[in-house]
Image (cartoon, rainbow, N blue to C red; front, side, top):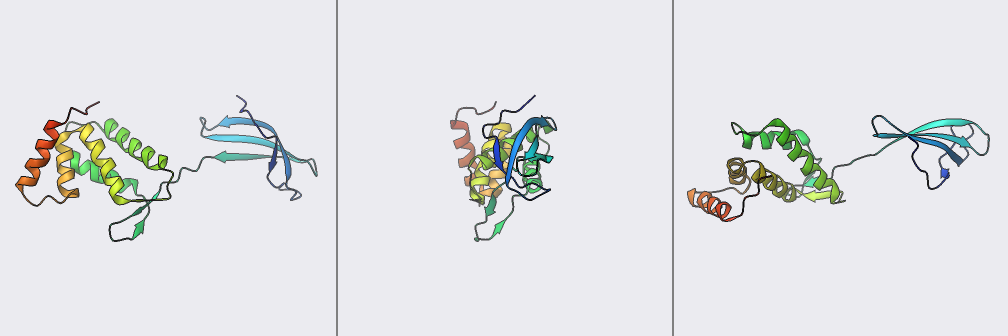
Length: 166
């Protein structure tokens, strides 16, 4: 299936002569729609060549509470959520869908950096939808509950909210 091209003249240099005037002759989706293959023709020398385009989905860096910065780590996110969900009746598919949703929300911010607190809140929202016990486990560590009253208050708040399950 050909991909529509709105601008036939692209500023891509020719690998043969180095000229910047090339024309897109044909565009097609490849790799199950994850890439665009383009046939190009150099307007200076007439040579033809192929380019491949892939979307670069960059996750924002995290700004920790101490001000340090670190790259987003999907394995760390998964491990934290798995710890909270340990011995709970939540399928791997639902966990992976929650992780994908969190990543989508992070990318959708359009920010290059976000505070780690934002990620923590997204995780808690997803866990609350998946399993309330897992949510309480995660919240108790994340919010640093100090005593039984803090657990009780969070459980009472949770019981007053309408059910958020899918």
